[in-house]
Length: 74
Image 1 (cartoon, rainbow, N blue to C red):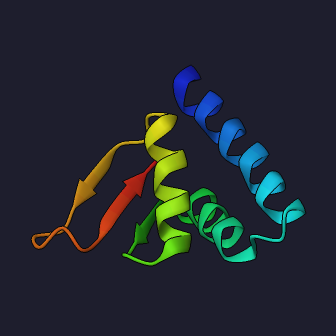
Image 2: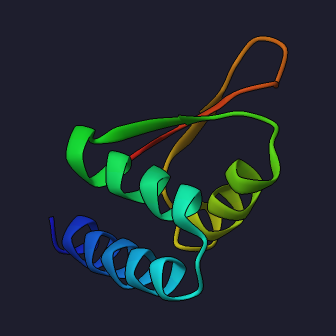
């Protein structure tokens, strides 16, 4: 429970940072994760930036059959 809340606050902080730096699509992906509890990322650059951050804070991830999509959960 506490780890999940800490993870949520880190995601909120990173969302604010992405917005300030003009990385709006990355910020949108993080906001979608907070709203829905999961987000599916593809192979584009924006998804890659979000994926690197989410892996660094320890979000659980599952990859698609061809490893072209990654689904992150809170």
